Amino acid sequence: DVLPSDWREQVLQLAEEKDAVILAHNYQLPEIQDIAHHTGDSLGLSRVAAEVDASTIVFCGVHFMAESAKILSYDKTILIPDERAGCSLAETITADQLRAWKAEHPGAAVVSYVNTTAAVKAETDICCTSSNAVEVVQSIPADQEILFCPDQFLGAHVQRLTGRENMHIWMGECHVHAGINGADLKDRVEAEPDAELFVHPECGCATSALYLVGAGVVPEARTKILSTGGMIAAARETSASTVLVATETGMIHQLEKAAPEVNFEPVNRAAVCKYMKMITPSKLLRSLKTGTDEVTLDRDIADAARQSVERMVAIGT
Ligand code: 13P
Ligand code: SF4
Image 1 (spheres, rainbow, N blue to C red):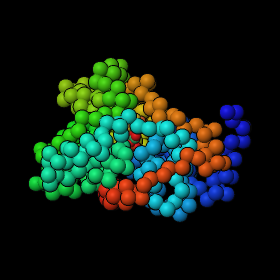
Image 2 (cartoon, rainbow, N blue to C red):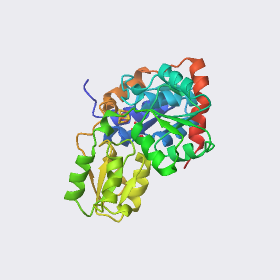
Image 3 (tube, rainbow, N blue to C red):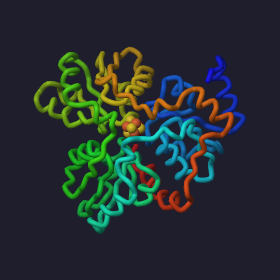
Image 4 (tube, rainbow, N blue to C red):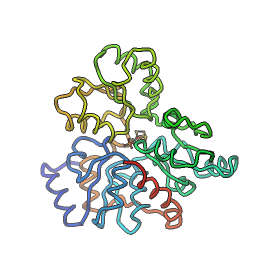
């Protein structure tokens, strides 16, 4: 596809004509982030999707995000510029597996990360994202068992912060974040001893970051475990001249916009989500021109999933 030089004007013009709002996740290509009406983390974008007046939402992100928008705003047209943009983490648990797990723990509350299919959400009591997972778990009565799925690293992080013992964690992972490991982190921290550290809780190295704190390699005050939206807020406040960033590398773009004077460096430059990068300017333009790919969802599944997503949207800042 040859991309016309005026693609930005065309995209904005078509969005206006079609009453469409463009949302982009913080891991999208920089040019997609820059053209979007709203950028943000999973929770922030779900909230926008639930509230906007536009009749069409073009979701530049991965499929479960667009599907969550459909669950929240069933009567709107939800488009994703390439429906093949999946998520390796969402594939680590199926609705059948979750039903079998629930049968082993009757009475347990199911907390699912938003990185799951609608069918899994339909079996869930309350969804969470990385920015409100702790508050979501704390909202469940202390004596009720919790089944937390599917991300093992986020689960371990939440368990550490809440001290919750009656919480069972599914052993799923995101291949991009699991690949940012403790050895990478230690090398980078040793090479940049004055740097601050922003670590996404999906990372394989989230636990290692705390070991490094415990071992005195990096001070606790300079080690922050944050969602992608939390990283942007922290970037605006940091006094460090270099920040090492452990997450998908698309994040660097918004961080540089938030704090242009700070040097943001990925802990692992190869941490690129190929699914997020499937959304390109030419596919965005095509999506607006032709109304593709439209996200469809069985009404029964959407109805069954809605309460868990609405509870997620209501909790946390
Ligand atoms: P957040 O934007 O909620 O931090 O999520 C990160 C992620 O991996 C989304 O796929
Ligand atoms: Fe899924 Fe990982 Fe990509 Fe996020 S970075 S969309 S969790 S595969």
